[in-house]
Length: 119
Image (cartoon, rainbow, N blue to C red; front, side):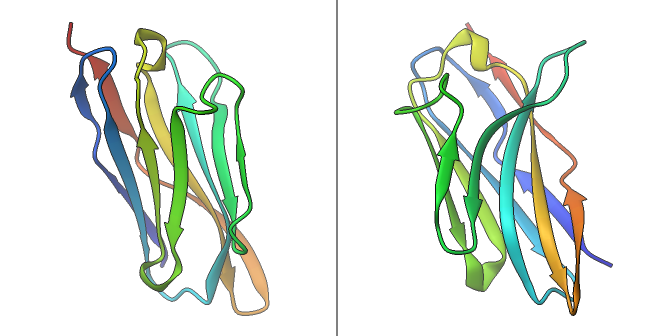
């Protein structure tokens, strides 16, 4: 069974930084694509950043230049470095992985990490 475990959320002041991590465990042949989403209370999840197995990245306009997504394929882990945080970045963040399971792929989600404005 594949599991995604997130870590790194917490309290942060506007202008501060946080790094989220999401590690996949289980029988995994590889991860084609990782995506980080954010979700505010009562709203739909929105894609924040994505990275492919080849390292190509994509960012929402609202985070370009402030957030950086990266991955460690050997550790089946993805990171989201969040700098110059704004109050509107205060959300729950979820990682999503498109996991290779032999000849097929399947989609898995992390449990969520809360980013909270401490001011």
